[in-house]
Length: 387
Image (cartoon, rainbow, N blue to C red; front, side):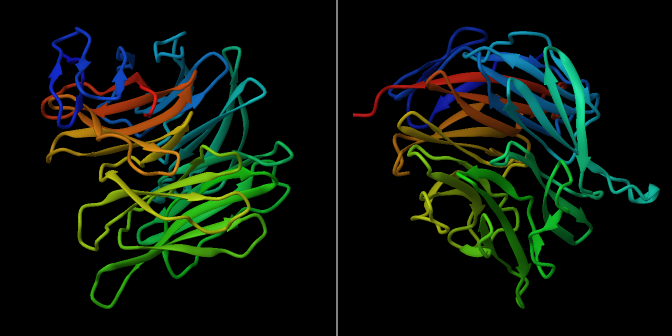
């Protein structure tokens, strides 16, 4: 039996039982009604994504039975049936909306035993019809993470990680094939998947590169490329799973980056967030946010005058929860951490977007020893105006 997840506010009392509304005392942000989006066929969810649409949002997920999309209203309730997009996306899923169509990138992993390097399949969903836009890249058998962006001319740009064994590379390319795919990472380091965003006419690309020093400790750097400019190292890293993510900032032309790191070295990984000012190719001051050490990446989302960090993290050896932390536009914390938690749940993946002036969060739980089913759910988060 799936129990309703409980949204907690650290340091505050909480009321709620079964399917009754959860009431949060002393918090500036309230969680709305929780909506069940899917009960996948298998025990594990590979990835989730959430993208705003004209009438709400699209929720996407990958599971054993394939990859799926489902329209949601502005509160996160299902607004239609789930649509199967294609095969499972074990290497990650990403989406954007272009001219009313949902464009989805699906990382299909290869099989070394069958000399198959996999590929990133890109499809479009419009008016209930799924059509293929093409394929690009070779994630290999161990690739993890894909990214999508539209270029200034409207072309689809794709980023992915190609990985096999100890080799990890960051690749980008245009889906239309007018330019050859490009490895942006150094061959001497292990690279994460790149995150892509368009700023004006320049494509922003962020990725992490790590290696082991002589003592066996992780060293690394966060890399940033803006348009045709040279790659710049903008932050040092001490965590192999940094998984950077680019998101729009509160100011016009501003972009934000979220990445995981151990600061100080040896500590539990936390999300680090920083701004990339308009026209700049460097980071502003880095602000530490919530802990983040689950399988899924952290997300940074601007909504009105707020910036939210949404990050899955461990609670104990079995349970995983989703941290939701509100920040001001200047990235200073605005209130305590809030959590999406359910006894026995393993929330390994989450994503968020801004819809109708409030935050919408999707979160997915793998089956665990205490829960026999996996699930995908959504909830709206509405915050009081800052003083």
